Length: 171
View 1 (spheres, rainbow, N blue to C red):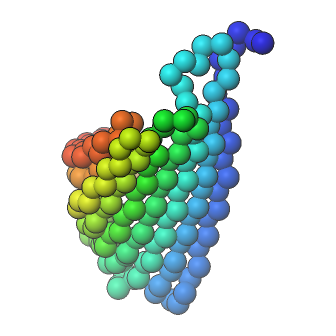
View 2: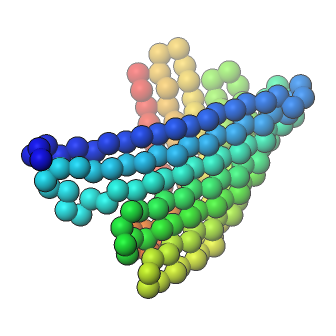
View 3: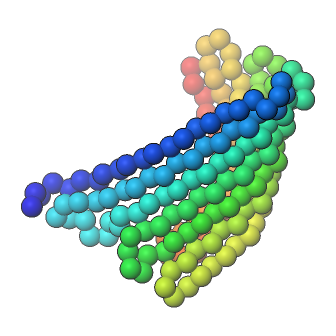
C-alpha cells in the first residue's frame, strides 16, 4: 500500500435548456458526485455521494425584466455506518431587473426544507430563504453586493441558518 493520500472525485452532470416560446425557457441541471479517500491517513475522512437537481422556469416580461421560479434538490449520503444523510428541497420565486446597461439586480425568495437523518436522530426544519444580488459593470471595473439568507444541513444532524453579506470589487 502506498503512503500517498488521495481524494478521488467522479462527477457526471447534464445541463439542458429548452426555449418553450419566445419569452419562456426551461433549464434543467442534474449532477451526481462521488468522492472517495484512499491512503494511510484517511482517519475522519468519509467517502460520500452528493446529488443535485435544479429546474428553473424563466419568463421575459420585457427588455429589462425577467421573472423566474426555481426548484432545487440536494442530497448528501456518506458511506459510513452511522453517517448523517441529508436532503434539502427549496422553491423560489425571483425577478431579474436590468436597470441599465451597467446595473443588474436579481432578487429571489422562497421556502426551504432540510432533513438530516442518522441511526439515532432525524431532524427536519422548514424555513424561508432569500437573496439579493446587485452587479455594476463599467469598462474597467466590476462591483457587486450579495445579501442572502439560507439554511443547510450540519454534519451532526443539525441545521445551520446562514445570513451572508458579500461585497466585491474588481479592477
